[in-house]
Image (cartoon, rainbow, N blue to C red; front, side, top):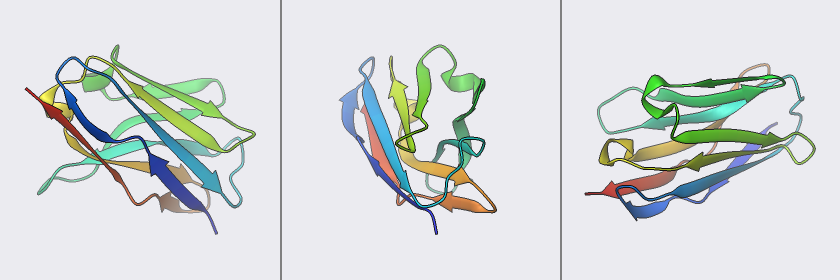
Length: 113
């Protein structure tokens, strides 16, 4: 079984930065995709960024502002979020895609005007 634990959310003013960290346990291979998704009330969960060896993918809305990185040995994935905007406000979820999707418990990010 895979478990994912997120940390690093919080309240920040527009233009500020936050860093989200997700630590995984269980069987997560380096070739498995890991990433971050976010969700606001009444909307479906949406992709923010994913990472696998030699490849990253970002939502258009965060390109140039967010950076995803991964420590394959520690099964850790990090999302550095800079120049945050109020529309980035959401619950952010860590994801690991092995034989199925595993999710963390979510961490709230709130960006004020």
